[in-house]
Image (cartoon, rainbow, N blue to C red; front, side, top):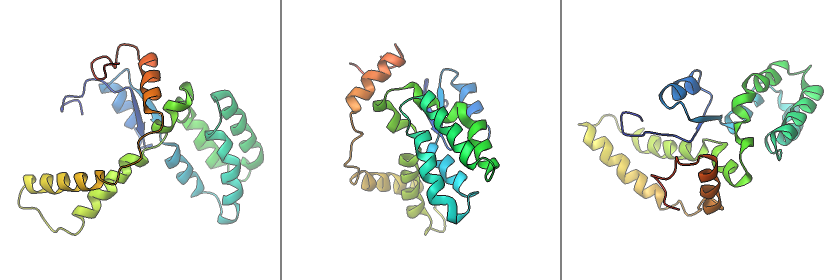
Length: 187
């Protein structure tokens, strides 16, 4: 990203790949890193037996949907009290990753929703995989880029749902990241 001209990233939502947050902060030291909550939930449920998953999911919901970090930590304590003995590895994972999982609680609701998951990016990747998986090889790099360009244009036709309250989110971001949005967005 840096080599392609990106000079600053405000918030990076990552999927939990080991070392990703350190790599981002090395190149972009002012970037806030948020682990994808959806990935954490999926990874957690892999270690919960199927008969407990529905109840565990219901008890986990107050953790990531809390109104603030303190409420989320109380919900995590309650989750640990109920499930910690049966699923210590799952609770330990949430505790160990908590500083990066809870980064989005610093922001108001208008900013939280767009930054707590990588699902939007993964949807684009899924579209790219659909386009390229049936192709054996490409004669050159330009042919691949053309295919992806056409694919992203076709996929973008389906993107009819704008981010709710985007204007409010940008306004809040300009407050939290004072001066860093000035070159990008003129308010």
